[in-house]
Image 1: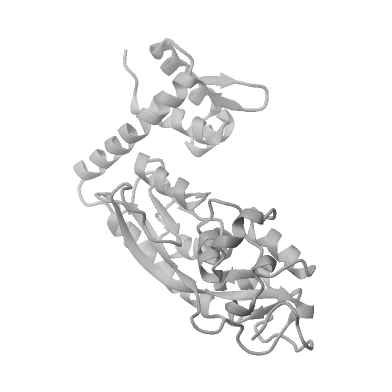
Image 2: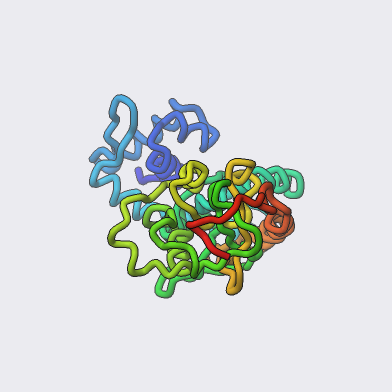
Length: 318
């Protein structure tokens, strides 16, 4: 007896989710059925693929190698099946859609309902990760498409890309530091600029926009999310750049938002997928819908856009 594609699909789901119950739900099967298939696969291999712990499931060293080899095999089999079936309007499984953390919480509340309404035949399995991990997942077939905010690196997997919309940056300060008029980043003290931790493309973009290359070695603060940084900004502990799409959620009445003086930094959001995907036509529809929804979000007047005057500010200068 050999392994089946179903068994590979189940094993990859358990590896990704770290839990048999959640993997069974994601694969739309019962947990006993999934567990039985995994046990049969391990029996065929003659060695465990997973360590079954009290609260989680982890890959064994053999399991890591096995799942790594299984991903492109399963992805290729699915692509072959779709090709043989003729032009695809939609896959017969959820589309695995990854987004970067500086986009997901701000676009998904609007985009996901719009996708469900416009493309009701589609199902999506949404995940959130940093750009490097998303591109690696596209390369090994564990993701179908990803929304990123940076240029594609050279030397990676061959990917197709569609631009979505421009997302300009603004400066966020405490209310006590609010100023009228656009702010020049050249006048913002570098030591007061709060950043995300390493691995976020938005961190790299903020470093470039604020010319912080020589300031990084002495920094001890690095947040895991923009929401965390905003809390520090509201408390007067520093200032930060925010993407325009984040303002409806993050601005409110706790911080002041300043448009930036030219040259105004920003980023271009793009939807990417692996070259040769049989679902490219579907991805183009998804891109168009995100473009329509997201452009409205990026252009909407956010709360706090007209900051109240608060006297002189020693920390930011127009």
